[in-house]
Image 1: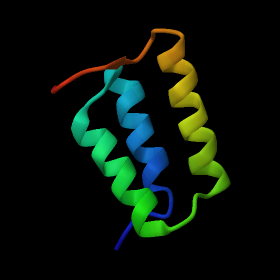
Image 2 (image 1 turned 135 degrees about the vertical axis):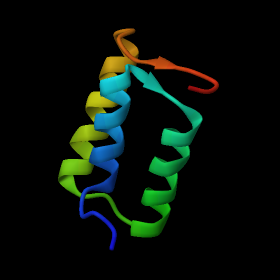
Image 3 (image 1 turned 120 degrees about the horizontal axis):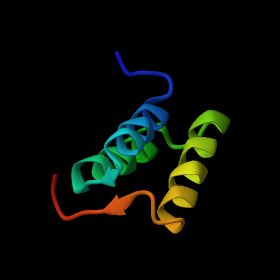
Length: 64
């Protein structure tokens, strides 16, 4: 069974490790494709992730 807020949980993982890995990014993209829409909670999580990346607190890395 899929989590209702899978994208938010993936964002939480990226925030915790302070990195956006290809695995996390691919999982977020897969969730978006599978859901076909984005909930308000997931949208807010993605906004937070982008803000943290813009501020330099989350790094995009080639692998973990």
